[in-house]
Image 1 (cartoon, rainbow, N blue to C red):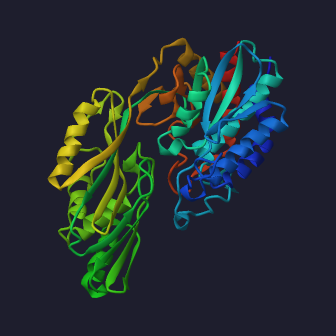
Image 2 (image 1 turned 180 degrees about the vertical axis):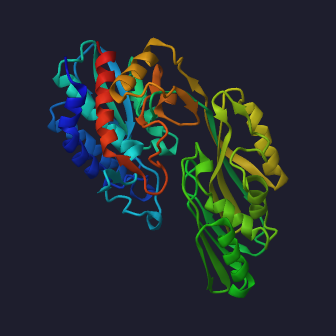
Image 3 (image 1 turned 120 degrees about the horizontal axis):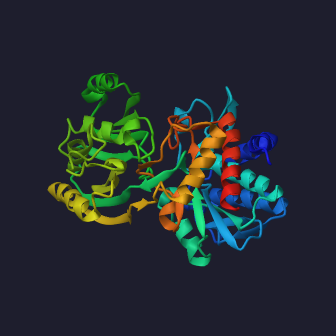
Amino acid sequence: MIDFKKEAAAVREDCIRNLAELVRIPSVYDADTITEGAPYGKYSRQALDFMLDLGRKDGYEVADIDGHGGHIIIGDGEETLGILCHIDVVPVTEKDWTYPPFGAEIHDGKMYGRGVSDDKGPTLANYYAAKIAHKAGLLKSKKICLFFGCNEEKSCPDIQYYFSKVPYPDIAYAPDSAFPILYGEKELTVFYIRGEAEEKGLRKFIGGKIYNAVPEKAEAWMEGCLADYEVAYNAYLARIGLPGEIAEEGDTVRFTLYGVSAHALQPEKGRNAAVYLASFLAGYSDNRFLQFIKTYFEDDYNGVKLGVACDGEMGNTSSNLGVANFEDGKVSMALNIRYSYEQKLEDVQPKVEKALHEFGFELDKLTFMQAIYLDPESDYAKTLIGAYQEMSGDYDSKPYANGSQTYCRFCPNSVAFGMEQPGITNNPHGNDEHLDLDWLETSIAIYTKAIADLCK
């Protein structure tokens, strides 16, 4: 009988070495470097090439699906177990990191870097688990198809393109959550908002880059001189406990505020820089952009002020204003709302649009993903949970549901399975994202056991 923990320990250092190399690739979406074969920019392309080269060197079949993603096939069973990973990452503000976000530095047994836990660590853990299972002859009924997507963090067009070219696997999991399993994902809607507003002293406002992360930095330019704002702004920063800067810039005053980033599924774990800065400036200007943000998002991460809050089986509604921009009188915002299946889009959208119309804004477009659910008592779920329990020794943690956005929304017969340790966050999408390397080793054992049991 194979000793899964011993096998995981044997590949630990090789996995860490390759993980460090992958984390050093800053695979953020980059519109300026999009080319044929690199639809999301050169850095995501580099990360994809890294993974496919690993597969080639190990003698496995690989495929590049026009740069949207690719896969490695391990084994030759008639059925397919899909493992749905992504190798793109969300942007960073390097100033707010203790260690370089793409340095892959190791301190106190943890590797620090953007993407190390979401989702590059889980990607490498599963690659090595699949290799161990294949080498040990455990892939009896199924082959493994490890998918590597290049744009999961921006609404998942990559996997949708992939499955337009490649058949669905028979069963699949995405290592993009926490153990033991994520059996349900909330309905998710991104409202893209546009409009116009008189400046009323506000020249420009920049807050956030992506809908599924809490903005960690916001900047604004207001008419006036430093003496008009400096004392009050510094007092405001001290009161809310966040750093910032203020300086004269020509005939304007430039404000900078640094918040705390977090994943949009749990915005309450962050501090939204755009909301804090807009709320302060709303005291000095009747600009409708500023007033809208202060009215509906100040001290509210659950959509209470919008009237969409609902504490359902999958948890409370979450509301994240991920992007808030204003320039030349033009308003552009992205609002991400995630809600349990007791609510529907037809319940939420009218309330959002009512708030927009109150301030003269309108809905430009929306992105919608419906809720998904896998019975945690199913044989498939129990197999995964059992592998986790046996290898981790944790029999207390329970299956859960939340507002995650994983590839499972686009693949039938799939569920999110790890790899965060229950009750311990690695701060994905936040500053100082990290991964405990002992847990990486344990996770390799968990995934190897799960693969073996699913491929009997």
